Image 1 (cartoon, protein in one colour):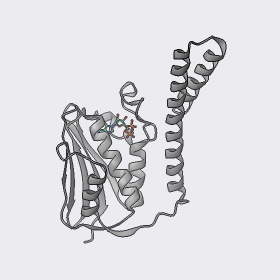
Image 2 (cartoon, helix red, strand yellow):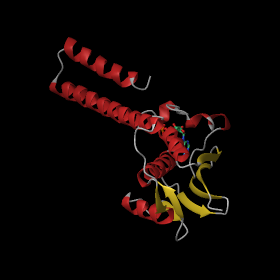
Image 3 (spheres, helix red, strand yellow):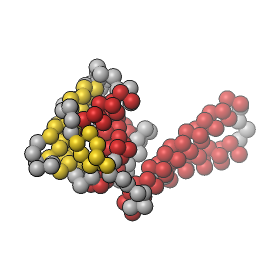
Length: 209
Ligand code: ADP
């Protein structure tokens, strides 16, 4: 469905343009639409490919020793996250075995969702904690929240709670990829949420004991 929709929009626009004489303005609009839909498909295809590669172990994923605290702080600066909107709390040092590129994708997805599903003035908290048992990286928002019956399903590929709200920007692939990245690191994801109040997405990584 997700690939078929942009394809049918593109085909429809082409058929219309072939059948009717369009004004230059209409023509520009049609081309713009085709371009946007093609972009969307390209994004979807590359995300699917990269997930399949991870799954099949084609992409040689190098795990290295890295300081997750430093990584999160630097990533926030690199992404230009405003300190006003996104508050970061990390211990000075938190060493893990991980892949920086994948962890960046995970964090970016969680923070972008936190912003996307929140009111404009909503605050987002990114918090890293280390206990004896585990290392937790959580992203907390004050957004719309997720109903209980959806909390299991959001991790599935292409699942979107409210397609009217998210279909234009999102693909429903983000959280499936987040889950995959957590598992590649020997960890798992969890979510807690109260509809109307907000959600907390947490990456749990094994502790050092
Ligand atoms: P999408 O591209 O639709 O954002 P995701 O896989 O990232 O896809 O998320 C799947 C669905 O989970 C979203 O469509 C949305 O309904 C829900 N969701 C994800 N993050 C949040 C959040 N922080 N608050 C509320 N709902 C969320």
